Image (tube, rainbow, N blue to C red; front, side):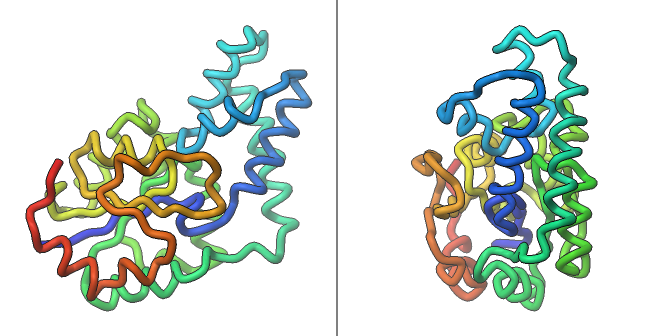
Length: 224
């Protein structure tokens, strides 16, 4: 039986991709690199530090990954603070409230840094619904490694077969399945060129996984 739901943040709770995109590309310009669309899209779902490590290796940069992280976060913070029109993705707040009202335990597992997670949660008053928040930036491995979802399940207090992950990225879905957790792929127009083929279920509207629907679905044994 479903006991806990693990949410990704970027692309699932918030459409922050335009800000991340602008922040990354401003950082790319600062260090003088030309990142192709294909390479950039392969970063989706990974932590900033791991992305910057890949950039340093790929372009043989003299700057450290930590320097790139600091530049990117400087730009992101500026965009976040000036973007008064930032909103949650359609339907996600209703879904969060629906799950919380029906007694599900909610955990956030995001590759975003904890300062960025806290900015979003404070702006939209989301802490009241979640028992824990995990940042990939605080872990050794990044999605598609399963570490963040294994730890998220532990934080929920339930076994992996009592949990469900909602993800929008190839790397995130692979991480959830590697952790042996039922995974819903959110096929959003905010997430470009991602592979949802490994997800147990793919949706385009959060109404499709309302508590009344997903609770019945996940009564069945979850195949891994």
